[in-house]
Amino acid sequence: MISKKIKITILLNLVISLSSFSIDVYTPKAPPSIPMLPMEKNVTLHYYQNPHTEVIPKLIKNQGGVYVIPTNLGENLKKKGLELKLLGVTSQGLISIISNKKIDSIKDLDGKNILIGAQGSSPDIISKFLFKSNNISPKITYRSTPEVAKLMMMQKGDNAVLPEPMATLVLEKNSKLVRSIVYKDQWEKVTSLSGIPQVGLYTTSKYNKAHSKEIEIFMKNYKKNVEDLKKNPSKFIKLAQTNFDIKLSERGY
Figure (cartoon, one colour):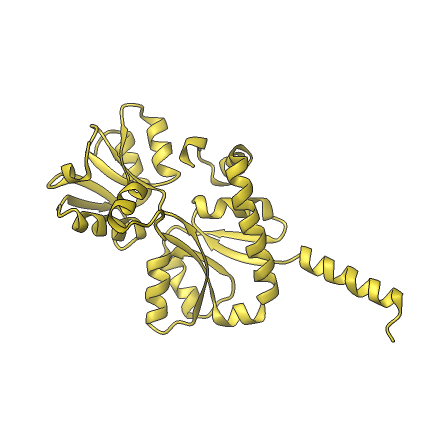
């Protein structure tokens, strides 16, 4: 028979183990990582800029951790034989087209110049899908997302595809620009789905098996913080301002 004292000790140890965990997360400075900011005691965030050069090599080497990457990239890597597990979809397509002049319809972009950050990225793939669905062919120029943002702030571009929080930041820096098209609305018109599965949380199958309990706690905390963010965005925006070193607005959410 296990004594009452031993049972209490086991329960206390279980509570402690459930409340404490340690996870390495590889993520861009973007909305999907904001719900992780309050978890700084348990989560170590490693920020990256280019998933192809900074993330894929780690996944190929089967390096442990959780990776915030475009869903199209994650699924393509799985098709190529990498044993990855999708933990959840984190972003529902927070992408807009920012323009120098108001555009009434996405069809008005046919033949027009448009800047897109990073060829092959989620914004690029989603843009091409929406362009094709609307039978239009804009003239695309690729730059990095920060370059696109800078060019638009200086009004050296006609139109640009930008994700949040960069889109809101650009609008705040230059009040002459307008948010012409919101991709979420366009996606719903074309697919009848309310959100775009743009970004996902992935890990290697090996890491998932070895750290299933930690990942379970992490995902539970992440989901709770997403709900808290919706209720009290100002708290999370302040954390993002500090960690991302950029100006954010509640309008971006």
